[in-house]
Image 1 (cartoon, rainbow, N blue to C red):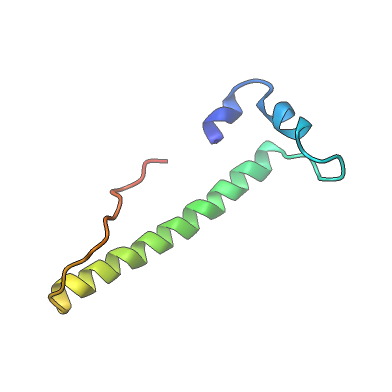
Image 2: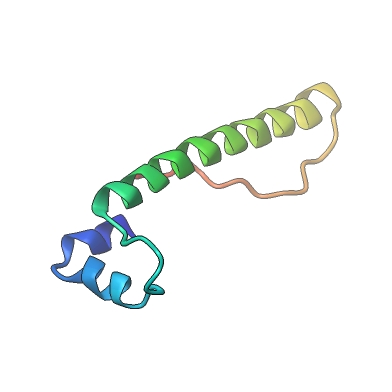
Length: 73
């Protein structure tokens, strides 16, 4: 989504489709959302990696889920 912000007119198109009584989106709103989203997902994936380590190394069980590699942002 942030890549779309670099295209001229993207925010005006998005804001055109919002209900009239909703506040207009700004680039700062979108950047803040993605910053918060990045923090949440980083913590979530760190706990999943910890869970995988505990299950495989400590408990000797299989880990049934695939985890993504490092995410480039």
